[in-house]
Length: 320
Image 1 (cartoon, rainbow, N blue to C red):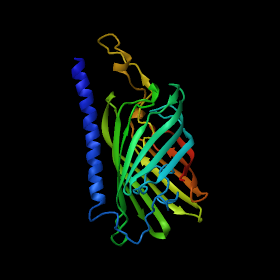
Image 2: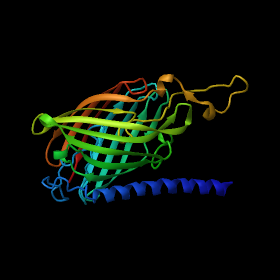
Image 3: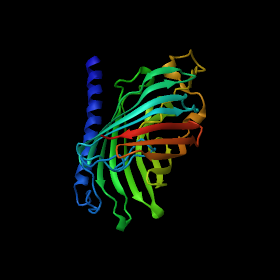
Image 4: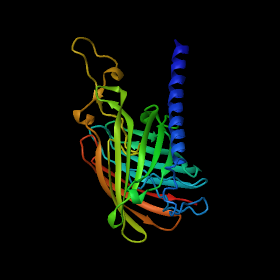
């Protein structure tokens, strides 16, 4: 029995890793194909020596992630040391100090390490600890084809793990992926949007997950040379696992024809509103201090009962 369980454990993880590698190899092939990153040869592509914090720019500033990657050898550090979410029908209020490390493995391939970091969860299930690590990767397919009205595109694949996570915030391996798009609009507006999928707790059985679509978007415009403003939102989840999909509000349920079972086998969401899709809309801004550092903020309101009524954070991004 033990050997069979061990074999299933490793086969499951091997399938997940092999599937992720297959997606990455496909993305690298596309990025080097005739639809490759030379779609706009007149656009200046940064190198590790010319990289600054505005090109390609921060991914933590708003809810979606860009289609662009850091050049080979490029590095970004992004953090939101103040990150607050209120309670919802699904989850308790939280404070997080999240971080994202980005490194350009190749010019069109970026590897990333993300976590919600130090986490404090409020009532009814108080907990203090650290959120687990998420291993992330992004591939840039091609730049924007303005003459054909085609957006820049890229692929992002991530796996949230239990590594360095406290038991209260671990949820096992949670893969997700998205196709990321960037496009310019009239009057100097820019739009960024991600279409993807991720696992979510099954409303009929909270011990299992079901895959569902995710969508995140942002529309941005420069107000001055150093200040940009944006509106943004998400459906089901942001691109990174910044909004918890776990349901930590439970109540025990006893069957009518027998004694109560173990809590883990009979728990369910305490309110039907917890099963509603998460949706949020917010506004924010980005201040470029210099070519190495930007500061940003984002304030959002929930548009469904399972979404926190308020999400707000302050953060920065830095490159050497």
